[in-house]
Image 1 (cartoon, rainbow, N blue to C red):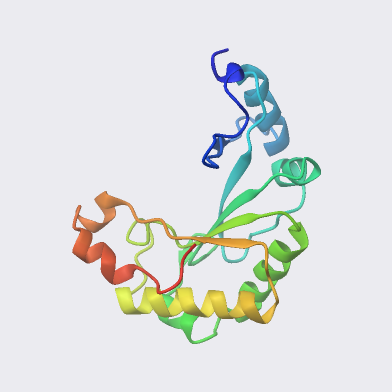
Image 2 (image 1 turned 180 degrees about the horizontal axis):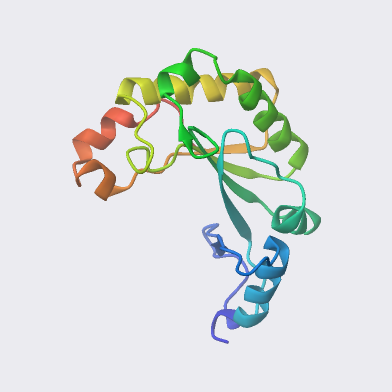
Length: 179
């Protein structure tokens, strides 16, 4: 009830967002609507965690957010299904067809899409060195640029625990361009 009393957007542009796990065959839009009803307000953003080969922004919660004109947060991991793929192979262009598909979907979404490539990069799917990660990140950005995607906001997410709480180690993974 308290959350319903604060302004929809913070004065500095913060958003109120979520990522959900559906239970018992529940659709993502039903889960989102249910949580919003419980909280007493709409979320401003919905976050999706997806592998390279499953990044649709159609249907479910993504479609609900789009119908409201609200942003999405899409994190794509360097995986095909549950199989890790190396950042080096992504950087070399091996997975360009997936990257082009992702870029076109983000572009078609029309509203802002906060995009992170392989967030918490030293987590479950460690697929190369810091240099490999930066090169793969650069490849993803290059594909988005080639597809003329202008609604993506580039987010870099590192987890302290994944990098042994070492800021110097994290800095090695930091791409040259983030928003």
